[in-house]
Amino acid sequence: MVEDGNQAMQKSIEKDLFEEQNKILDRFFSLITLTFTVFGFSIAALSFVYGRGISSYQEALRSYHIAFALFCLFIAFFISIGNVLAIFHHRKLVRRGDKVGYREGNELISNNLKIYLDISRRKNYYVIAVTLIGLGLTSFVNHFSQHPGLAAVLTIGFVVIVLMLMRNFRRYLS
Image (tube, rainbow, N blue to C red; front, side):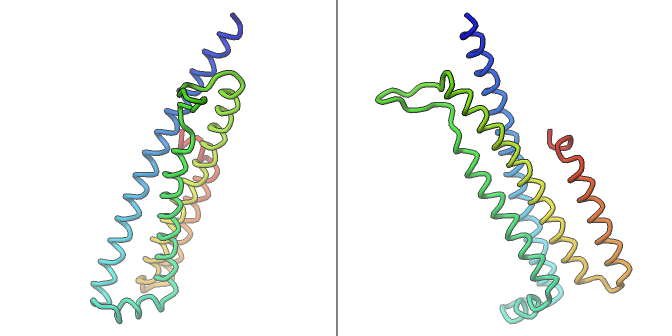
């Protein structure tokens, strides 16, 4: 009877962990959309300022601010895609010979631990990706700012926000 109670509790935990994984999956899909939006904004702004064509984009990329901003967006995009694909690694059903069924016993407990650790890791990757997008936007805006004071205020503001997020990220992501 105790074995059945533990099994039921572990299945309930597994269900909650899969719901948390679905939330994280939704966040990463939103992050991919945000990355595309910021990239589109950046290309539109560069086209407006530098003109169109390969030669004008090469001229823009010579600025380390713009190259760094696009690099940050590129890395954030690949973090997001990698995490979306990695979330599907843990499946509810397992193959047992010629049958397909749910995990049971110690296998269920160890899989729940793996899923919990995976969720914690994915939350950290989410914070890193959001930070990279913000850093890219800050670098992009710094390129076009005419006043060093404005660039300093933007950079300091961004650093303060990132430090606050890093300090309290578990509360914000729950």
